[in-house]
Amino acid sequence: MTTEELKNEINAVLTEKHSLQIYLLLKKKNENFELRLADIEDDASPELEKMFEEYIRSRISDNAELQLCQLSTDDERENAIYHYDYEIYPEELDILKSFNITDAIDGVQKFNFKQDDLRTLFGYIIYFGTMQNGLVLFKKHYPVLLIKRDSFLLGAKKDKERFEKISGDDMIRMNGTVQVLRLDGELYVIDIRMLERNMGFTELIRKAANLAVDATEKLGIIENIEVLRDSAEKISFAKKLSKAQKASPIFNLNISKEAVVEFTKTTPELKGKFQYSEDGTTIRLGSGKSRDAFIKLLNDSFLRSELTTQYYETSAKTQLYSEA
Image 1 (cartoon, rainbow, N blue to C red):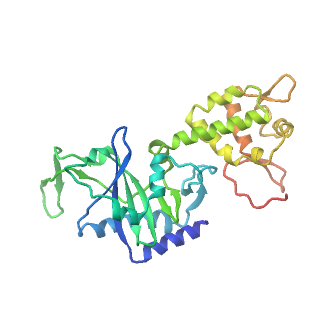
Image 2: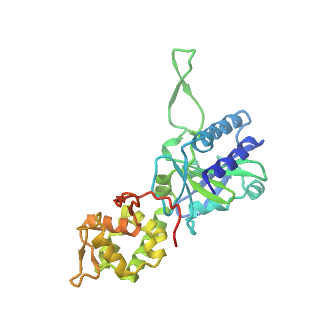
Image 3: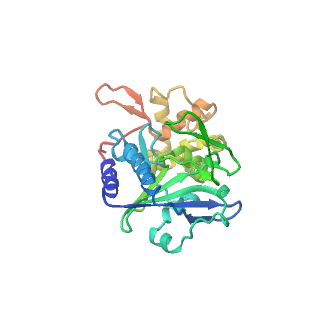
C-alpha cells in the first residue's frame, strides 16, 4: 500500500457516517488481558469522536509530508508511519490484530466499577467506523493519567475568579493521540518508542538480531562472531541487527564472503574501519566503530554515484530499479 492509498482508505472511514466505541484493555499481574466496554454517556461521545478524528486527520490523512515505511527495515524518521511487517505478534499486539467489532459487541462486558479495577488499565482499543468498515486504534494508558477518588482536584472556569473542587470517583485524563492503528487487517505504528517499551516488541527485536548473527556466522565473514553476539545483547545494537536480518542485500542476494571482505578493503568509506585475520580472509571486529561500520556494511549503506564516481553513506534508501 502507498501513502496515498493509506490516506484515502482512512478518509473513506472518516467521511462515512460512523460511530465510536472504546474498550478498556485490563491486565492483572500474571493474568491474561481482558476487554471491557466503556459505557460512555451520549453527551460525551461526540466530543471523544471529534478528538480522535482530528488527531487521525492531522497526523495521517491531512499530513502532506507523511512517509509510509516498513517497520522491520526502515530507519526512524521524523514524519512517518510504519507498516508492521513482522510475521510474529507479541501478545499485546495480537489483541489489536485479532479484534473483531462484531464479537466485541456480542461478547464483551461493560466495565463495572464494583468488579473491575482501573488500576489494571493497560490501554484502550478504540473502534472508529461502521460494522462493515472501520479503524481499530490502540492508545496506551499510563498510571499518571488515572486520577484516584482520594485525590483533590481544582478547576477554574473562564467566567469566574476562583478555583472550584472537582468532585467524582476515579477519573481518567485522555487526549486524542493513538500509537497504533489497524486498517484492512494490517497494523500501522505511529509511535515506535511506545511499541518498544510497552508492547513486547523488544523480545521480537532480540530474536531477529540473533537470526542476523546466525546468518553472519554461516557466511563466515567474521573471525570472532562472539563479539557480534555479545553486542546484540544491547537493545540499541539489536535494533540495527534486526533490520539487517530482513533487509540486508548481503544475505538476500547471497553475496560471497570473498566479495564482501574485498569490498571493505577497497571502498573509501570503509578503509581502515576493520582489522582482519592473519590470512586476510575474515573481518576481526573490535571497537564499537568497527561494529557500527559492519552494520552499515550489512545494510549496504555505501553508495557510489554514477555521475561523480564518489561514494556516499546513506541509511534511508529507496530502490529505483535493479539491472539484474
